[in-house]
Structure formats: structure tokens, C-alpha cells
Length: 149
Image (cartoon, rainbow, N blue to C red):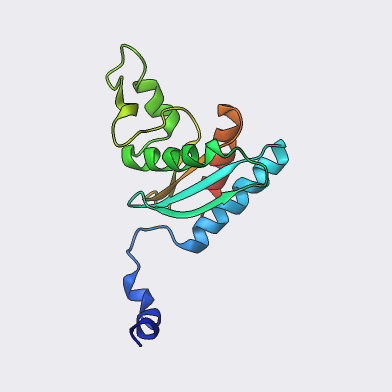
């Protein structure tokens, strides 16, 4: 029963400096609470330190088209170690990263992707939120990122 022994040793499979499921759940819960406070319906994605999907929540009624956007916001933030809003400023016409959004199988270069850091400031993952205005998405993502620890 390889599966049973693997589960018993799961602690040996966790990478140091990576977001835990408990932290990801805290981020999602805080993001959902902020979205409810705003009266918005959001898709919320959490990626780990490697940019892989760790957790996801789609609030009832949230746009289907925002599922992919939320995941790409989280991945974009992690791939470039900055909020997607900041990357977006560098991706405008005449700026040094103009056109970057078409790389990496598509990036999202507007607000709503935020880094998640541990208590020591080490990046352990990222959150991406989509479903409302960019300003609302950013507020929800920031609330989720702040609550992860």
C-alpha cells in the first residue's frame, strides 16, 4: 500500500518556503470576506512559490470568464515577483516591457495579482482575483494576501 505510507510521510514532501494549504485557505477566506463587504462576486486563485495552482474558489455567480484571468493574475505576479499592476505599468506602449503579456502562454498585466509573503518577507505564493473592476479586484487580492499568515 504505497499510498498509505506516502500519506504518512507527507511532511517530507513539503518544500520549505512554499505556501501551505492552511495559508491558502486563510487567503481565500479573507478575499471572500472582502468581496462580500464590497458586494462583488469574485474568482480567487492561489498559486504556490513555483506558480502552480494551490487553491481556488469561485463565488456563486462570479463570471466564468474570470476563472482563467484570476489564475493568470496569480501566476503573473509570481513569475515576475511583483503585483500585476506594477508589471502593467512597465508593459505600456513606450515602456521597457511592452508586449510582455503575450509571453508565457499569456500574462495578465492589470491589477488583481498580489504576492503572498511569509513573516520574514519571503515570497511563498501569490493570489489572483478577478470578477469586478480592477480597483475592486486589487482590494480583494490585497486582503487575501495580508491574511495568509
